[in-house]
Length: 435
Image (cartoon, rainbow, N blue to C red):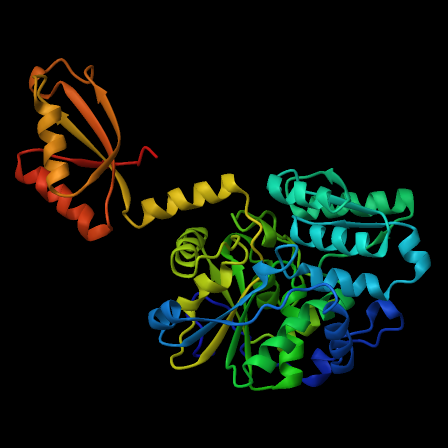
């Protein structure tokens, strides 16, 4: 197993023979792509619509990991994600007849916006099927580009099945969000930009949902420089590619559970899988709670908003067991609605002990609440919420439960506040934060 991965991560232990990994010859324009010439063509075409996303050196993450960490901020694209690249390039290769039929796709949000924007640019109709769990901001922005939105299913796979059904019924041209070599070629243009800007890059970390971005980036990176290591990152609760690589064939997960909605995919792309087997150097999985902490890191240290799927590569940095390397983390998108953002911030503050709650039993007599608040104030704690319950017990010596939610500077400060309360004879008990 490669040294750069921890034990919990799946690494492609052996590169199978060229005969085993050879991609079957394709006969249609739909299946052409993933050649250097096609990547170069795609790079020129997508320049018409994409924003320039220069690498951002992260001093904070570099100090944390012992590597030189750079961020590729695709969250700054016009549609808020890299998906515009693949969607626009794919639609540019369609015939006038195919575009005239109208376009349809399924997406958790970012590909939806990419297709909607590209369809508007080409003056054609777009129908987008999105899971019912899609954040409202992504739904509204997709509609804002002129697309018709159909909400169906709880996860991407269910929405995709519905999209195929509608395509058959209405004769629409289907644009797959990832399992399409032309789309993957468009996504891979990111690697072209990374290598041009940082020719000596050692590692590229790329999020994986269905595998389109990873396929394009890994394939082009290897074409440009076989020494570059490309590591895919998946949420632990939606690790369809990791499971498929371990078993040697495409596997469908029974369910997916993750806050990284953009990568909540049960089945990776079958057309892409041979390229992933050949060109990806490993998989890292990330737990949801790691994404929460990564969100705070991005907001506080870089002043940028990255959605949960885009944070996968940031959270994965601590699992990359190398030092002194040039590492690029692709931030795939930044489309996070305010409600989700608020929840993530709150959970992040709790996880970092910057918000915590305690329960204290007090004698039922005047002045006790004042005394406790004075102790907290002296310890520089900031009270956020108080809950005073006089009906906990009939024992007047411990008749009142006081629940206090407060702010602290971190774990050390929280412990100081707890110690201050204990020193004054109280027995504070940590409880779930009322926040």
